[in-house]
Length: 338
Image (cartoon, rainbow, N blue to C red; front, side):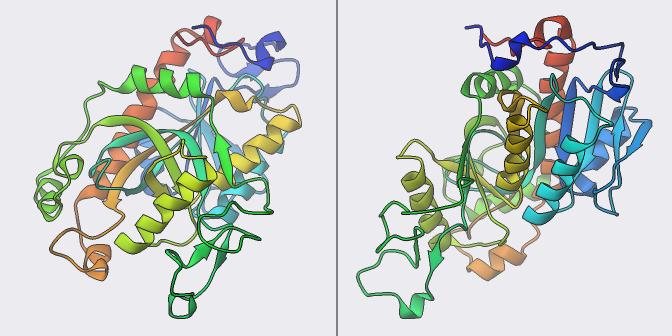
């Protein structure tokens, strides 16, 4: 299937390899969004990102977007909602960039549901759901008949749809592009390690026990680094409620809905095309304890997943970026997905 977006009519000058001559701004083919130094490191070490473009409004820890001559750029937001939204907005609004034909890929680590993934596994997102825009009552004070201590904004009980909200609770990514990203990268060789393999024995789930793999799923965003079976079960019900049973989160992380909010605002301002945005998250840790652990023991354990997740986020996102960049004449006008 050929997927055509509203950007198909746009025909900005793209001068080899980076410079949009008419505006004198950098026009990346692919912009990779990472969140902290260890996620950015494989890109810096392997992609010859020698052009540094300082941007006002970026984190002082990561003050520049870096690019190479092939049209690949990478930025680092710093962790959490506030940093992610602020940094991505700064780049999207900067006159130094022309992003109207740019493909944006968020590529970072995450917690992973052991039913659906494992340490080092890579998960493409169809939906991104905010875990925190809701009411919460201390579980010691909730009514006896409540299944959760969290309810929708304005709702009267768990399971009821929110009555009001911010409009950023759920983002649906371009499904055709997400499917293309999955099909393009599902066979990418993924890093694994003995420490992670040993740690997986704490879990009974088939997915958790296996080697890393690539999947197509959904992701859950929260500034709170929560952990444990009871919270995870509640979050599963929350995702199902907000997506009308269409969503099933595999990964949980601290930035996606904030980053996507900034990108959506830029799309509405005509600065980029939200249909060109993709999300990838890789399993750095399980989001709950194993069968022989307490929640706190699991949270504090060294699983061996972190270095695998950072490396595999790079490998999978790199493969996706290469698929677009290697056939840029086709991709620059509109996403080309079969």
